Amino acid sequence: MSHIPHLINGERVAGNGRSAPVYNPSTGDSTSAVGLADRATMQLAIDAAKAAFPAWRNTPPAKRAQIMFRFKQLLEQNENEIAALISAEHGKTLEDAIGELKRGIENVEFACAAPEILKGEYSRNVGPNIDAWTDLQPIGVVAGITPFNFPAMVPLWMYPLAIVCGNCFILKPSERDPSSTLFIAELAQQAGLPKGVLNVVNGDKSVYDAVDALIEAPEVKALSFVGSTPIAEYIYSEGTKRGKRVQALGGAKNHAVLMPDADLDNAVSALMGAAYGSCGERCMAISVAVCVGDQIADALVEKIVPQIQALKIGAGTQCGLDMGPLVTAAARDKVKGYINAGVAQGAKLVVDGRDLVVPGNENGYFVGGTLFDRVTPEMTIYTDEIFGPVLCIVRVGSLEEAMQLINDHEYGNGTCIFTRDGEAARLFCDEIEVGMVGVNVPLPVPVSYHSFGGWKRSLFGDLHAYGPDGVRFYTRKKAITQRWPARKSHEAAQFAFPSNG
Image 1: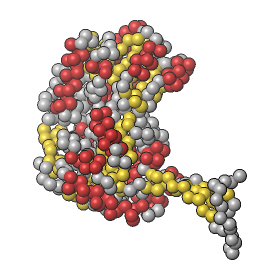
Image 2: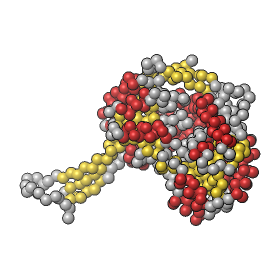
Image 3: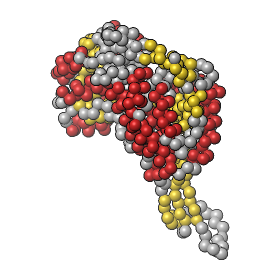
Image 4: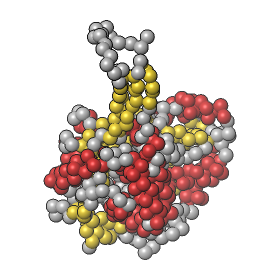
């Protein structure tokens, strides 16, 4: 069985001997073991990053950008190998894995603009012979903690931008699917990153050792996290109380509103991908369809059921599939538990995916596409983030009722509306209390030069991920005011507060 190490100071490090199995979700077999860091191992990474920081912060942004250009090229050249690693450990289809990587590469492209995004502002003669400017300076050692569902994309949301801003980075990826993350980090080394600028340290969340080490280390100045809300709250609370910058993205329960005038054929196609793509293991997955009126709800059920039943499901490493397995046996069992609860609480189970068996992969972690109708807000399948291939239909009488339903939910990550009515779409965009909104777009994930983040208990912190907010998160602004008095002049002391008036 192969061993997946840490990457510290440019070298593979085995760690202290603790490890955890990594599984192929399609077969249920353990394929490798990943090293799990203790605090001493994490401290090695912190020390390496701290030592690399002085030289890296003084490296010109243009030179940092050149490394990112080479990194982007290496990612594109190794696309198929990266996708295969993702699929083998996460279970998502190869096509989905390639799509994930491409969205990550978009963030590397944004980071390539370092000389532009790090330009300060300059004002001449703000006073007599006085010039003023601002300078965006790096923070120092920063860290990111990333989830299993996007082992390539979410790390690429973080460290390319942090690094081109002049920081040194420690990445704690998910221990469930670490191989692609490590491979990509080594490509960054191959692109020319100096030793210590990027470090990857694996750890498990059961004891929070690796995470707590990052939270408590005074050398780590900022933390970025993507994952579940309880851990996001924990990291935000513990990090901010120690004076760190924290950007913690939590859970979601994303709604799609279907108006009576919606283009139903296109809406159904969009819902199929948004609800069942990546087996529903996306923080932007649509898990609730809010139908305004029984007529659109009945029509939705009639059209979508055959498509759910026709989903092509199998081992993620195969081509031409719609859906693979869930990431672990525990995730599969959790999703089945939610389906059981939905039935017990009175929802109408229209399509049941609990008994799916994939021939040749009987031990894989599969759940078929599942559909509930007549779901109500007090049911756990409505309130909780299931993170599986389960779509719930809620019936309401008006757009206002649909919006109230969404606004009352504790999460505010993403939402969308399907309509041909511009007035309804504008009202929805203006009044909905959600951070990312789509109009006839089911997964409104912002492009790399905007920023990603939800509202309410989907985000803890003031700044969203990547894009312009990412630059602000990973830099500190310094305002400089400079004056050179005329030679041989003597100026009297001024005791009144100076002004330019």
